[in-house]
Image (cartoon, rainbow, N blue to C red; front, side, top):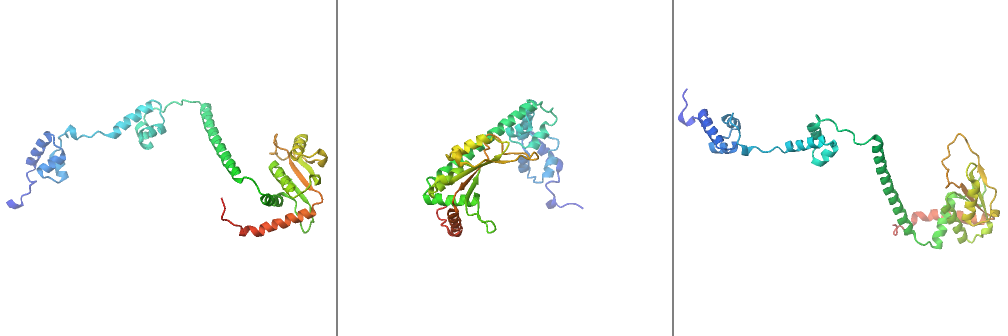
Length: 293
């Protein structure tokens, strides 16, 4: 059946269109320019019209990844690691691996001992920074305390004693003041608290408690000097027997055992301490929190 002139497609004369397209291509036109010139908006047809004709040089964009690939290969030849290449070129590790995996692996530049020494040095530096931060925080907290009022020292002393001192039990009446600790700061603070309460130093008796394998004479001298008491104020040192099945961790020059401080004729003082402690317990939930730091 014959086509009417009005129904004839503009793409019917393919060879004529192809000739025009090739001529335009050879003049240096891009596919977009040929499409607009010939009014051919079917991409499949457009590609068939110029099939076999190379694109003009000016339409060929450089491939950025080709350049990165060459740089990556050159760096790998110089002995760079995947991580170093990835960081230097800003590309993914998978791309680096794809580009250089056919190249030989770089030889190790450091011995295991050298690498361990470098790692150890880095770790020591991190520890140093941490220690400095610890000291800074502790020093800052120390400065915020400032001077103590008599009331503040009194309350601190009551809390210290109730934490570390001997306490009376219904089944074991012990209304006497006995305080035990290994921390020199706790000992000196407790003594300052006793001074605040007017307890004479003549009423104090001391006992050193220490492991038998430690430096016993050295510990006795240390505690005597710390509390400023003559050896006559010290009871016989209490020695802890060594158990060969256990591994002691409290060793070294800083281990001096514990010091026991006993206050003679202290039943009344003990009752005041216990009463004060329960006064703190009752008051604590209602404490004014408006000045918290």
